[in-house]
Image (cartoon, rainbow, N blue to C red; front, side, top):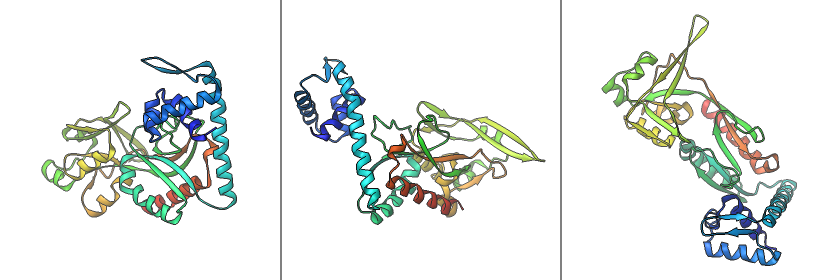
Length: 301
């Protein structure tokens, strides 16, 4: 029985569509359909109930799916165990990375890692929406903030502070805000993800040993579901951005943006490397964790 056919069966069951599964595995729909039929012929039973509108697992398919998942997981474990014994960092990692971090930092780091470890393959998924580890076949995700699923394995990479910033050209035209409430008079560049728009900006200030908190419902004429787009708008003078300092470091250094309201600060957020299960924490994952921790330590000081 072909393991690639088993992997295709699992992918089809997860996505609910042979066409989607074929796209995700870089196959033609005809090839995927033939593989499913071949598997059904070997088993002597129908794994899916097909109709013109939907594809769903049969009772036999439901039972077989459980064993398929276990078999594929055991094969992965065996592969990783052999590499660990040989001291090799090998195999393929499919990694989901936020857009700004992915394009402007991780791409160059990825080149370094792969040159040092030629047996390692990395498939990169860049975007800010939360990854579905199973449907998107994601091995690892780098994400900001608190974990939503306690079953995941998470390694803290860094604690990231956020800043307000704008291009000098914007400040020259519209002035420098001196208090959080003055943001209401400015064009704020908005970020949205998973149908949530981040337009409530929170800033703190230490005053005589106590913390004063300001929450401002900002407005602007530009919003994007891609953090790198917000970054580019800020650099080109389109408005004020509320960004991870990590994303803006090179622009701050080069004078392409300036920090605003520097006597206020925003609550910092943790950046994690996440895996759906401990079984998937391979030598390659631990290597990546250690490299990223060191990179962030060097960048953030």
